[in-house]
Length: 367
Image 1 (cartoon, rainbow, N blue to C red):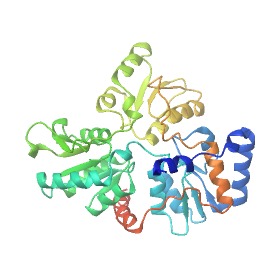
Image 2: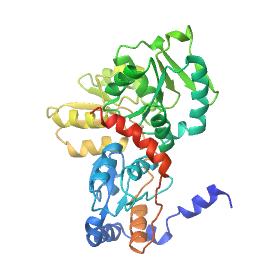
Image 3: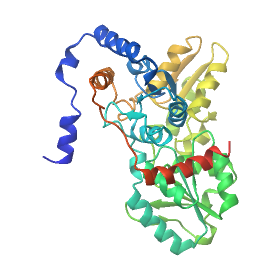
Image 4: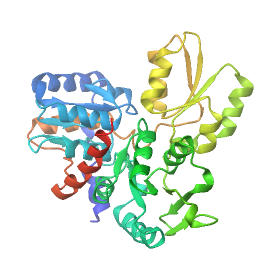
């Protein structure tokens, strides 16, 4: 049996969970939460399904939830309702006595998977030959622990969509150039906002293993990894133009993981936190088209019924990997936990943790 077949078999929710009535599933989860009390902490990412967010002890973005897990010293078990890289970060920040569990091993991030450590180390060797020791690596927190460790090892740091500008500015105090992993769009939008021209940005293609750039390589200031978010890349300028025609009073707000052209055409752009707070503070009766993950857009529409909130992409589906964890997986994971089984624990080895924490701490020190 192949590894993939083993994962598929291992990750299949037992049929009896599918047959339970929804009310019984909910009651079982609430009962487990009551019995475990402070020993259990369930962080839920903004993009998770409502049926999972109902049981979250805290909601937020990936780093925020990992930090809350770190601060929650009473929690013996952290059942992370998010994706793999988020659970890795939580494991690296929590103590050895705490156990981080991901209810569904298939809950990953296509963006994070677009930069593996072998590709990155190969690219680094080539880029060092081209530019010598003039490059500092930065990685979006939406990356694997191994990529975070790579950045820590070479003097770099992590960034979030909220602090990307501050971290890029810091990077340029350290080296002449930066390598931005793994999301080219966040890197491009951030660098452009700081006055770096598009003609000063190159793109590293990890598949074809080459640098995409026309002109004199000495002009390159930012090297963007050719990765992207499969959700945010689906937002387009024609969608914005359609809203401009059909609903000119609608404010377009998008996440900086969207392509450069989309960010430029929108009225506002910013992190998930920025989007939430902007809409929360908006006047009643205003209309918003939001360019981010559908679960969050729908939740905002429910939370703020005094405003009209719709997706910028009317045919958008929730992120397939962010949407993996459902109430069945959560219940299964918690019942296994009560039975003494750590259901899909996420652990990062000590060496990777040490270097990755360097990258995280360099960012946190800049707050």
